[in-house]
Length: 405
Image 1: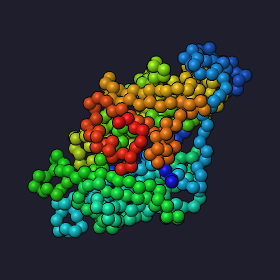
Image 2 (image 1 turned 120 degrees about the vertical axis):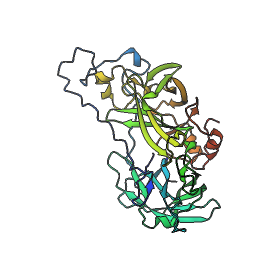
Image 3 (image 1 turned 90 degrees about the vertical axis):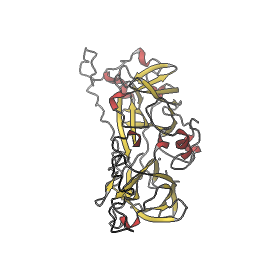
Image 4 (image 1 turned 135 degrees about the vertical axis):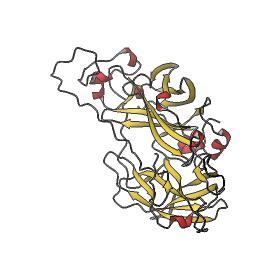
């Protein structure tokens, strides 16, 4: 089975949509060691000059030299690997309904799809998507378009719904639970299949005289109890990054993620770490309703908690206080706070081989991703969601095994 990174979609010229061209992370440039014959600086500033044997007690739990090291992923294979965590299904609207051409007070919709694959082949991918009505009958099918080819660094390739000037003739005016299936046309194999929930609602600030002037959105509450442990690769290091979703228009500056090991806090995003914004899904006509807004955030602790890739990393003064946690096996806990209130908690483990330990959730759930799937405990009052319905939805309608009940 092909396989889970978050691809994002584009806007069709004829209608309003929620699609964005995907932004794939680039490896961070790393400082090149200077000639070791040069004198070492005398200050403790974060200089890129190499400083052999410069370590502190902060990283005493890790070896002072040698491995294990994090191993950079191999180049993408010629067989495409589907990344299910990148799959995005969104709504494209029309301010009319093709079956009632003389009435401009109807809002209709059709889905659009996008995702990423790891693929190193030169042959163009041929994929298609089938969409199914709530009763299981076929709604329509569409070819999917590959955009670009993988670079040497192994960045994913995007696959998207094509532009279609006749797409408005496929629209409907109802919500519900819809099915989909992605097929590799070359061998007729099923890449992925699942379901998505469409909610039809009357926007707060719409004209009450026209009951069919509505809006639609995909319900993504099921993303909240799922996180991913990722790595941002550099030349000599890889920065561990935790990706998770929140509901509501939260402010990046109000978030803090603390990293714990053996019951002790070892890093916080408020001191040298970073909180980044990822993908955003929202209902187009939500107005000021923050409950119709889903936002991915990333949490990392550069120069504080890193994976060491090569021994050269120890020679840089800027990393003298860094904890190379891939050489410190055990369990790590991530606690996320919003304005001082704890709102999330998850945990991951480091094995004895210099990288994340596989918790088995991906394999048990038939979601083969290049990341580690983590269960998330949603806490506090920030998110306005229905946890029972969200967890029952699984991953696009597929059951998730091993998540926190």
